[in-house]
Length: 471
View 1: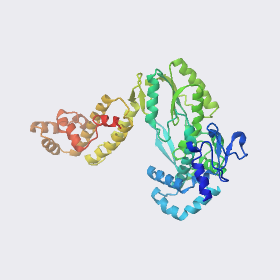
View 2: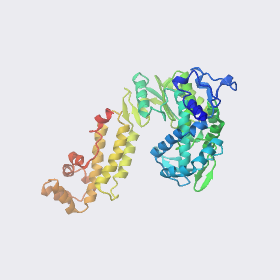
View 3: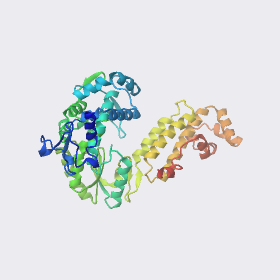
View 4: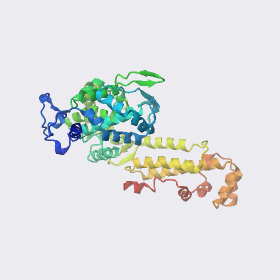
C-alpha cells in the first residue's frame, strides 16, 4: 500500500496542487541541482523545471498506465514485429507472462527485441525507413511515453505543436497565419536532414538525466534507442537516431528540439514548430538570411543535427508549404499544390480501370480518401479548387463506369435507362473514341450528372465544405 502511495505522488508531482509541497515518503525522491543528495522535498514553481524524479519505473509499470498504453497501441493497430505477435494476441500472452515481464522491467533486466524495418515512399520522392517494434515493445514504449509526457509537456514551448496533448497541425497553421497577417511575410523554412536518423544518443540521454533520476528507466530508454534493426533477416546495431515509427519517438524528438525552441524564444523570434518542421516568421528578406545563418549554426554546432541546405530556404510565405498548406500574402490558408498532386495520385490508384471492382466499391474507397483529406484541409480557402477536383473525380468515375459497360449494346442500354435519346445513344456508343475522351461528351455528362453521383453516394468536397468549416 505504501508503494502505491508513493506512485500517486509521482503522478501528481507536476500538478498545480503539488507544486509547493510533496508529502514526505521514503519512496519519493526529489533532487534539485545544488541540493542533489540532500533529500530536500519542497519545490517552488521556479524550481519545478529542474526537479529530478526517481522511481519512475514503478509508475511506468503501474496497472493503470500499462492499461492505457495497451488501449492506445490497440487503437493505432499496426503490423506485427519480428515475433509475429498481433495486437489482439497480447492480452492472452500478458495474462500468462505479464508478471515475468513486469519483474524484468522493474529489475532492469528487460532487453528489447530487434525492430523490423519497412520502407515507404516519401511524398517528394525517395524512401523513408520506418521501424516496427514488437507489440510488447510498442506497449512498453507507449507506457514510458505517457510518463515522460506528464513530466515534460508543460515545460515545452507554446510554439511547439507536434505530438502534444490538445495540440495539433491546425493549431500550428492558425498561429502561422496570424504571424503573416501581422506583417511577417518572410519565412525561414528550416528542414532538418534525416532528423530521426541522426539524433545523438549521448546528448539525448544527458538531457533526460537532468530531469530524471531513475537509472532503470534511463537505461531502458537507451536500450530502445540502440535496439537492433532487422533488415533482410540480419540484425544491425543502431548507433544514432531515434526509432522512427515507435511510440517513444515523438516525445524524445520534442525533448531534443525543445532546446531549439528555447533558443528561438531567447532571441525573440516568432516561430511555429511541428515535429522537425520549423518555420520562423520575419518582416524582411535580409533579416531572414541572417536568422537562417545563425540558427543553422546553432543547430549544427550545439544540437549536433544537420540542416538540409537543399530544402531549407528564406522566401515569401506563399512560396513554401507548411504541413501541406500554403499561406498567402494576406494570411489566408490555401491547399499547397503538392497536396493536390498527391490527392490526385491516390485517386488514380483507386479508380484504375483494370481493378475489376464494382463502381459502388470504388466510390466507397474514394469517399474514405476524400473525407479524411477534406477534414484535414478544412481550414483552406479553396472553393474553386474543390469545384475543379470534384469535376475531375467525377470524370475519373465516368471512365470507370464506361470501362465496366464494355460492349456497345451495354452502353446503349445504360444511356437509354438514363433517358438519353436513341440516336444519341448509338452515336456515343459507336464513336470509337477512348474512354477519357468519351467521358467529356455532353451525353455522358447528362447520363452521369451530379445528381446521379449523389444517388451513388459520392462525397463532394464542395457541398460538404461549409459543414466541415463549422467543426
